[in-house]
Image 1: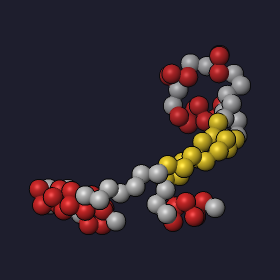
Image 2 (image 1 turned 90 degrees about the vertical axis):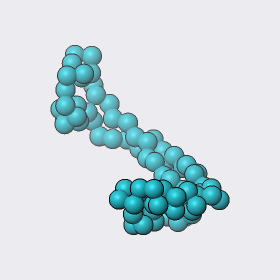
Image 3 (image 1 turned 30 degrees about the vertical axis):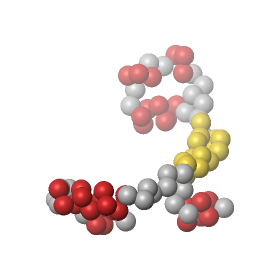
Length: 80
């Protein structure tokens, strides 16, 4: 099912949560991501978010204009 969405250019985002049992006793704002992850339990998948962002009709012209103005910043490989 996910392949169907991605094949049609939808953006997919997984939403998950992990519980940190002793979060009230931790100085989370001073911890690194690795330290926080060490305290957290297993991730539980809550769902998949499907986003649609269709290409506008004038996108090709806009990309061509950007390539002309900034040839070293936008390559064709990045546009695909």
